[in-house]
Image (tube, rainbow, N blue to C red; front, side):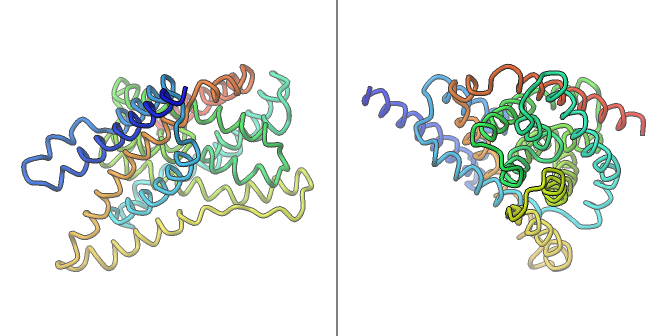
Length: 328
């Protein structure tokens, strides 16, 4: 048993090392071809295959590093964006964001509590994760709701499984439907739960889709704060600290620095693009960590009903947002 564990550790480190070396071969003249195969979907797929066949060798490491690397990568992406262009590209998704957040919460609670008879807390957490930004919303709302660890785990696992699926199928559907970069970026930001999968799907679809998806998703993520406050009011939970996603504010600062400091200076103009490119590589590695976090134990812990709620709610928000985007 100890031998198998050591072997899986070696395989894990080997895959991670090969991916990292190939990614950063971009910076070595003549070796950029080595990085062409390392994309967000491939990285996620490798992580998933490893986790489902070999288990989780470093679960605590995966969880901590994936969260930190995702946040750093998102902030780094801000150095490749222009404020005016980002606001213009994200404007279309802002209006629907307000409607979709409220609508998703109401429909999610109806499906979970009324149709499937799931516990109030689990249903509310799955709805929150679908409405705003996946695991971040669940982590912020859970303590305010005074949810049990089991409810938190089930909701997080449900959202995590659907996120992994989304990263693969959304770009495929986007191309099949003939969505342009703006349309796909908006759709991904609204219909995919977690920031990591939104950014990953946007990066897989194209440069403009990545910018639109990131801008709208992070703006949407700010709804964590009012949702937590409303949750506290509805369920009468006082004295619970609201977890604010500070990296979103740093992302905005990065855009401002790039727009008003770096882009306007010929000497500094290339720095923003370098940081942004470095951040995208960090994002790809994050996809591997996220994939490696999904084990058979996680899948079994979810159960059927929460997953059904998540899928039904996901279909509703995906179809309705797509119809809105195509008709506007």
